[in-house]
Length: 290
Image (cartoon, rainbow, N blue to C red; front, side):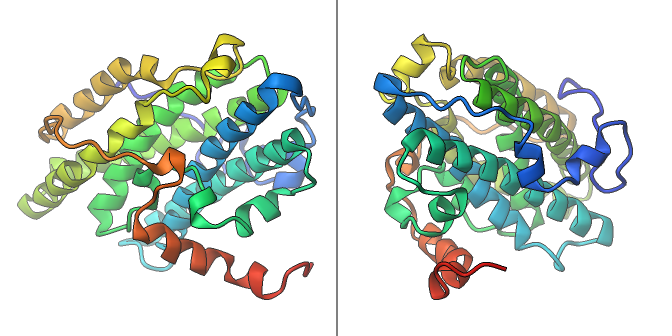
């Protein structure tokens, strides 16, 4: 249906690459050679890496909130695995950001000891889960962007970022297929599921535009081939999303108010509550190891 070929299944471990998916993050990171940038590109690269990492860390935490609460057991496992994939990607990106920054901050320090104003995630990622339709539609909209984004980042001039993106692209391809399948089931299902899916699409649509915003922070990185201009992905993203929505009998909303601010640290009140829950253990016992 235009949203990627069938990759490995995290729930079953099927596929030739499945064992790698279950290796610890530290072990998977060992395969990626450090290539921390220095000079004029260091500060913009740290910012770009935090944007990539924070999207995944926050969205992964949101998905983890479904553990034990999903509508069926298989979906409980699937959402937990997708959350683990995203948090694993975030860990690798934060580790690289810490290396580039050169201030001795580890991935854990960047995850657990930054305040909300220091986070650079999209507002879309931090919104409450809502009902199952909201979670699925959000995951679909974001994954439809993440797949082509990671594919292009896998050719980054930064070797470490390229390696992380290549690993993440395999996982994101499955995430997109999984979410799109659910959008089809909900949209073209019962009267109730269709209404909930359409309502979720309408409510989330103002937040999708932030994915494609460009600014001066990443301009030198785009010119150097380190990152890509996300606005170049918007047209293909719209076509992909519209294709699935048509099959699901859902109407793509019109563009109106466009939420923004997450990339600059201006967040909704929801992020503060999420970070309070996510960071409490590390902040209560700083320096603890287990």
